[in-house]
Image (cartoon, rainbow, N blue to C red; front, side, top):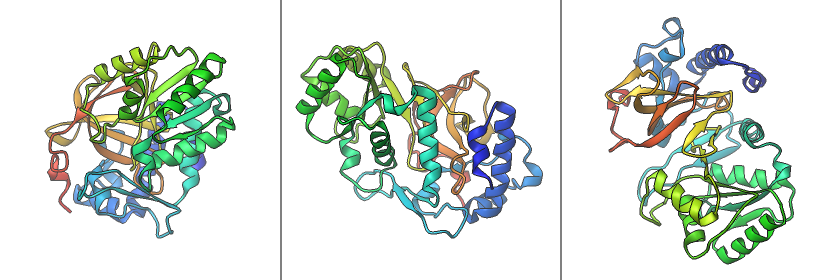
Length: 325
């Protein structure tokens, strides 16, 4: 299947047409996804709209090899997890698709990465192997070509000094960080940033008490002296990201879309405005599965934007009618 068409999508009808084409391709080519669809009785003869496409529960990535070919993976991305817990594995057989997806998406939302100095504060991800977020951040750092771009692990004082220096000099800065580390950075410091995009990637990783988004963003806005806190929404099992300019309202690139499912009926897609399980369509995930039922709860807005409101309790067993294979 030609991947170039995915990044040339123009409009909803184009997206739906290509999504159905990708569904038919993955039905035929992925043993795991094809078998899942057959057990649900959702073969291509019966699927004619986005709402009829089966969404694979994300937990399948913990114990299944979700791929569309026998090609050796170029990268294996793994999720973080608590000690002893099963982690997801995403076997990426064409890493160029991931690189194209995150590069094109960033450009659409923020412009040329070469205009930014990228400061990455991602300690929990740097401290393990196989993070797709680290892969993306490394690429953005290279593409920025700024001498001060780079990762910071525990050097918070050095990072704070660099951030102030660059911002005061009028440099455009992207500070991307995991939530607990951004909180650590502002705990004993106060900034007044005028030229910096502060972007949180979520996650306390057991390092701090979990906070609701509104409280987290309030603390970070006050600490960094900014009007808004941006957010990135992505995960190990996907090859695309959604971005929020603030208030937790996420927008997708043209090759990514969101639906919500009924919390009590995982096969039933909901209307706009209702809280439900977030289903992601990621057409860049061509060689794995483009139709993922996540464990996040959220709400879809009429303009295609969405909000993440939380997670299912006991998420690994909710929707178990979809898990029997």
